[in-house]
Length: 640
Image (cartoon, rainbow, N blue to C red; front, side, top):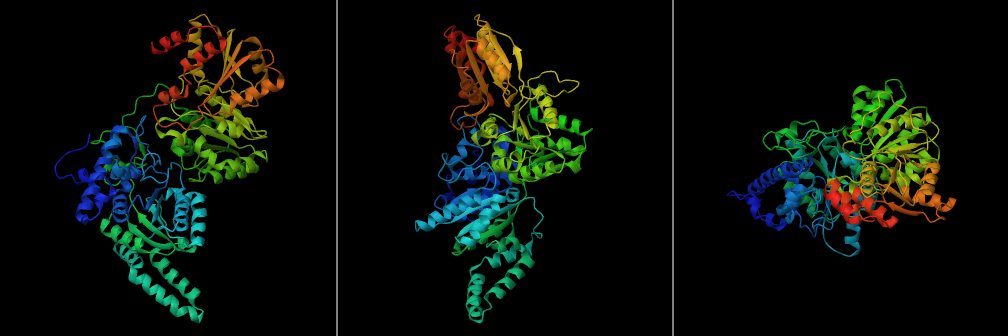
């Protein structure tokens, strides 16, 4: 519910237009109230907190100076956009953040005209911004394009590809580098702020133009320009960005509206070439628990505003990612060639467990998935044993490197694919939907999926022992199934699945963590006297053709199920059966995959309900294919 305390200026802000004409003191109060609102909202919904708190003043300043949505404001990644959403007419919806049917935790085009470009992956903003700038120029329009990119995203090569293009193109584009962790800048203080205002001012830029006209006839334009850039770079930094063709302004205190607003006004008046404003901020600014936390409360569950203590339910089983991290660390005790690589997600992938014990063999390469893959290939080519731990959705960004640098050369890089399947509140941008198909298409690459946490531990060992080709194993977000962990790990036989439960009429062949739902479905079918076999495929490639043949021959119905898009495991099984004649005798086969849509955020259970991949859906599909049984009874059992 909206806070209705008296003198709340935020209550009068329904759109950025309501910021226009406000005094500096009023804007500062609005910024403070936005910060309070963000803290209160995220305490209820969970989500990204520290990043949003760090850009409160910057967000207020941008919206007070520029004319959004005519001026295009593009947030890189978008996880810092909560203040932006509050100021752009979505304040009354903020407590639906990251929930089913609610606001996205990122920018989203379908959500608001103030979100001109959706994002949740890093380093897309400058490329998109240049696209908007060129579209503006071609259509002979007059507007500004502002791309706000964080320092973490600047580790991604795509940002520099875009800057190189923008610098050569000379289109008018404003890039704001939100620096909350970098050490490349000189200290921010009164002199730095003064110089930034000076070099962005109209008189200074007018003097530059006059000097340019004066020195050009003498052939001194290039030396003079370089001298001026050198002097500015020496005093302020930013030489790299100047070399890429950007006019550099900064570093600037990103929490001082008295500094930010005049600089943004100066920059808004510029009409030539790309400009980069280097803004220094503090992640988690204004909320002590976030400021003092190691990760600045980057991503949080619900929490107490007073204490900062997060409400995390006690897990019933270890998280899959921790099983991976612990198993890899255990194996490294007796194998000094094991290395772990992650792309800016050591805690998210639990390679931080490995790093704590073997820091010299752990590599966090930043948000640079392409580099991570080829770096791992180089390690493998010289005899080391790299495990490249990357979320499924982020590994997509390094796909060419998987093909060109790993698979073609048959290098034994091990891909630990985290967040396989649907991921809940982060929605479509973070769902691990496509890796089964895009990796399974590659010759020689071994593809595994863990049915439970014990199987995951065995797959880590199995992957370690594969030394003549690349391999991968996928596993979901969240806690495991609660199975007993083996005291002694043994590797899997390559290309061999397992039968969990024997039956006669129906065969359910699961690939990955829907195995538990497959077992529940078999129980539902057994309650109606329908006997079902449940098998864990373990491998999508090489496919256990002996197991597939047996299931096809001994059952009337074969159902495949996976936490992935169409074109994956089920397609591999269908193609094999079609080629081998396994479909010629009337087998009824039903592949079950994620639907052919990008699913919006919700709880994982609700997302799988919408996808039709929970136990009741599996049982109902079996009854439908078999032509016997009562689907209504399945629904009753599911409700019970």
